[in-house]
Length: 326
Image (cartoon, rainbow, N blue to C red; front, side):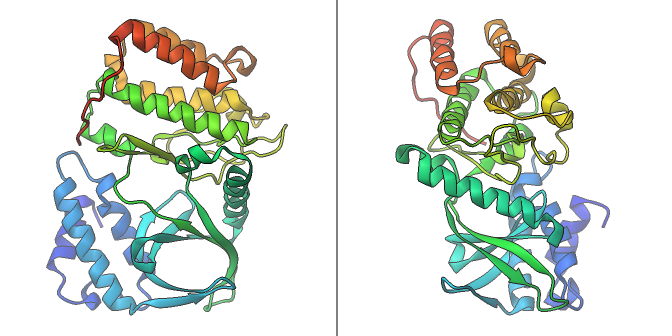
């Protein structure tokens, strides 16, 4: 497959599942779904991607016939692939209210277990009023592949509709998001970090693909906690593909991560999103959050949020709701 246009043509021209899938068809489906997902579509192609992705899902459901997965908690009806993540595929289950997260390779099960520990800790030790800033873990279990017997750690996560990644936002605003719009995203990202850090969790991979926003409701959720750190002195286990340049030196150098690690990553996300539209005062604020030495950076996201609010007040005056569209 040579790209997005070829994938659209193939899917929209298909009349039966056999036109796209052979045998199990899983590899072909995952490849097409990754190319056609609306969040990955080229600029100006979101509507075409949405139509092709929906058609692909219908064909896959017809081909697959639906699969039941039985766990100690209950029986889930597995639907089509919804997202292709860094190390795992996420499938729609129970009509879209939840997602099955299954690593593509058994060796990555440790990252899925790491996420399950982090999400459990957030629910047990994080403030309830901020639970919406992270996915809700429904259950974690070991899945045995019927073909070959490989064992993988899988999770079931609650799913919320209407969210898009910052990577998708950047596609709609290639010249940079207006800093007044980026302000609410930045604020909510700091809240998400404050929530996590008080619960003793460092996310470890605050990159554009893992920060989801709800454009209409100005909501935010931080996803993919597979790279998280829950014990002092631990290093982030791996880098999210495609974002090495956003990471601070302690991660690329495999040194211990801390709250300052997340603050660096979150700041780089926002400066990347705003680009050349960044006002000088915000640029100075960002530089202080991304210093090479983690001990010189802020560690307290809540205190940093208060400083950020003071800066926004000086720049733009009292906060007002600004509709945001993609």
